[in-house]
Length: 155
Image (cartoon, rainbow, N blue to C red; front, side):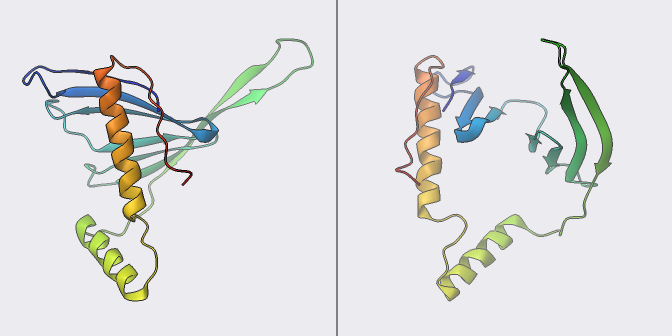
């Protein structure tokens, strides 16, 4: 896991705002900004890929998901150092999503897994892993933003 930084304004024991960077195998990187004091309430996730990007905005009633054909392609030349990037800024696609109450979907999935004996998408080990990351974030904040390693037991 990367590190975190935060600030406590109202309660000396709890961060009111935090910035967290988490690194995963394969070069996947996540950066989070969380604040219950922030005047702009957002529920947005941005995923940046090598070919496209997507934004999921739970507060956008019109189009919660947008897929952007946006990226950069590296153009190589034979001469040393003579490469450039070609920027691509294409079409934005907003697929239609099924509207459903998230808690209801979660409960239906849990009941289906219990009825069929299949493993749910988010089982107890998933919960253990989430708590391990949260504890590492807390430890990083207490250590001034130091990087912490999370062991998921080989899962």
